[in-house]
Each structure stands twice: as structure tokens, then as C-alpha cells.
Length: 311
Length: 254
Image (cartoon, rainbow over all chains, first blue to last red; front, side, top):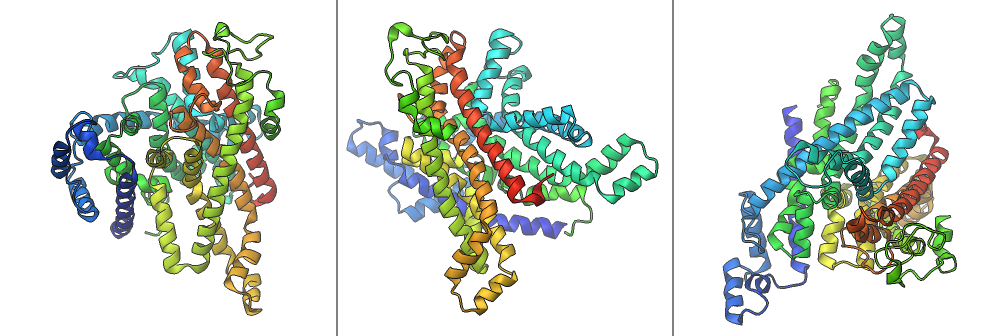
């Protein structure tokens, strides 16, 4: 197990290197001179030159890159050009928020998705099954930002149950989390249903039934456990997707998360912030990339569910 | 249906999509304006219809970019294996490391917002998916007898790839293309919604939603219809893709 984890982590190194290289070169081709941006449009040339020196923009690209990486590894991502705050502080607050939001969303998605998926599978072609699969189709087809607006319209404007924006309390997070989680709930429901249907037809389920086990024991203890393997992979994928989808949700609900920080950063050409964000998932959470790729990180979780998995 | 609407937009739309009457601002749906008017008094039905044109254009171009690049990369990776494969797939991993639409946003940040860049960004963002699927399919096919027979008959690598392997991988590629049309529309309209894609006043559904936000309370219909349009089209492609999968790839049917 330990060797397996080490091997997976070692595979991360070239990818991280690539990610850092890609984000660094992307920034190099962004039009606009960062020194001018820092010094101000109409600063005198000497001052611009001084700023260029101070931030090292006059060095060769390779030197800049090495410095960028060695600092990033130490957690120093420079200061935001706009408000001179260390980027790492900005990120900490915002990232914590987005993680909270994503976590709540995945909880909602898992809860709804698993229940709907299991019931649909055990009562295949029933009304509930048909309804939940139509619901799932809506779930994957609805644009997050539109769903967010509709939720706002219904629950904040008309019913006045929940606030449409703001942050700090749990109730502020509910609507955004539902909007963000809807698509994932749909994907999880579909996957659970398909996986359960396959498992239910297996011999060992028939054996369990023949042994006189109660139906819910058969379904939840024997079938669901085995059906979880592909579903867990989906959890990983969906979590990665959420970090991306958070950009839209946070914009719709005006939430102080990392997604909005990035969009604001782009609009204001804030170098350091964007640079760090693009590299975000790779470094902050070594599993992030793999969660996206649906590979090793959730591979670890899958191991728990399938002890015979060769490590 | 969606394609028809897009093609016939100029005939179907009752009004000019960019011409508004300020006296007719934010009017709810009526006999004159079936879906009402927006903040500048423009007819929403006409804008939704013209929006279909823009969306179709984005989808076609973006998916085509992803299809061509992804299929080629996947084919070479899968067929030659070894270092080539490793290089290509690690590069795909790097692209996939940017979660969700972050990659598309990053590309736009470099190129700047706009229709063309939006298509590029949405296309590149979909390349890894195609590459992975094609590679997987080539990997399983290249050991089959008919490939060996072709090789024994003296066919070149290129001929084997394009005349034997590619046609046999078509089913998953077609399915993926259809489903990607849905995803690309969601991504592209999302980017436009953020202000990173199609710029107003051009009628694009995501951008329309974004401009409708301030009037959510006073004129909810302005935000409702463009979103509904996106959802229906995405749903259409998803249904179509699922149907194709069931008929082309019976193994996956539950």
C-alpha cells in the first residue's frame, strides 16, 4: 500500500512540473507589461525600470521561472499587484470558502444521488425510476448559473426563505450548494443506478436472498457496497468539477470564493493571483489533479471498498 | 429542430435582435412580444432565435477542434505506445489538471475575450476527452487479427491507422461528439455569462442571462428564456447522445 501511494505521488512530479511550466508560459504571453501595470500607466520611465528590477521582470525567462517555482514551493506566491496583499493570504480565505461550498455541494449531491440511484435500481421502470431519471436529465442539462438564478428567484425573491447573496452563515451557502450540486447529484444518481442494476443480477445477491436475509440487508449491505466502486470514482471526478463550477456559482451569488477571485484577477490583470490560481489544484491538493483525472486519489478510496484490489 | 432554428433565424425572428425600443423596456410576454422585451426594449424571442445561430456556430467549431486534435493525439498515442504515448497522455493529464472550466478561462485570459477565442478555448478544453477515448479504443483494437492481417499484407502505419483502426473506433467517437456538443454549449455560455466569451450586444444566451441579472426581481422573464433555451438544447444533445450510445454500443445499455 505504501509503495503504491509513493508510486502514484512520484507520477505527480512531471505533471506538476508541466502545470507550472504551462501556467508560467501562459502568463508570459498575456499582453501587457506587468512593470507598467505596477508602476501605473503614466509613471516616469525610470520608476518603471526600477519596478522592473525590483520584481525581477528584467531577468531572463529561465531565471524568472526558477525563481517562481522555488518561491511557490515555499508558499510564497508574491504580492497581489492590485492591493499589495500577499497572494497567499488572499488565497487562504477564498480557498477555504470554495472548499466549504464544494464540500457542502458534494454532500448534497451524494445524498440525493445515492438515494435516488438505489431506489431507481431496486424498482427499475417504476414511476419513481422514470421520474428520477428525467430529473437527472434535467440536472445534467441545466446551466449552473441559470439554475442559480432560478433558485434565487423562487427561494429568495418569492418565498423569502433564504438569502440571495452574502456569506458567513450556513444558510447563505444552501442555495449556491444546491445549484452547484445538482449536476453532480444527477451524475451520481445515474451511475449508482447503472452500477446497482449490474450488481443486483449477480449470483451472490441471489445467494444472499436465498439465505433468507431481509431485502434491505441484501440491498444496502451486500449490493450497495459492491456497487459503490464506480460511484466513488465519480465522486472524485465531480469534486474536481465543482471547484471549476464554483466560478459560475460564486459569480451568480456574489460569493467570496476562489472562482470569483480568479475572474476578478483576469479582468484586472492581477498577475500573481491568477498565476497561483491556475496552479491551484496541482499544488494545494496533490489529489486534485487525480481527482480530475479520476485516477489515483480516489483509487485510494476504492481500495477501502475493494480489499482484494492489488496494491 | 435547433439546427433549423439557427439556420432560419433571419426568417423566424419577428424583430431585429439588436434593435430596441426604449419605450418598450422590460415588458412581460405579450401578443406583440411573445417572450417579452429586455432592458433595452429588444424582443427576447428574436434574440433567443439569433442566439441559436451563435451557439450552433460555437458548438460546431469547438467540437471540431477537439475532435480533430483529440482523435489524432489519441490515435498516435494508442498506436505507437511507449514514449509517444506517455508524452501525449501526460500532456493531456496536465490539461485535465485544471478543474472544470478553469482551463478555458485560463486560455481566454491569455487570448482575451471574444467569439473566436471562446471557440478555441472551449475546443482545447475538450481535447483530452477525445484523446483518452480514442486511445483506449485503439489500444484494444490494435491487437485484433484484422490489424495483423493488414500489417502482413504490407499496409503502412498510416493506412492501418486511418483505414482500419479509425473506422472501427467511430462508435465511441460519434457518441462523444454528440455529448460534447452539450458540454461545450454549457461551457461556452458559462464563459459568456462571466463576460469572458461573446460580448454584448451580440445575442448569445449566456451573455443575455448575465445582462438580465440586475432585473431578476422586476422582470424575471428576461432571465428565464435564454436559460430555458440553453437547457433544452443541451438536453436534446444529451438525449441524442444517450440514444446513440444505446444503439451503437449495446454493451453499455442497462
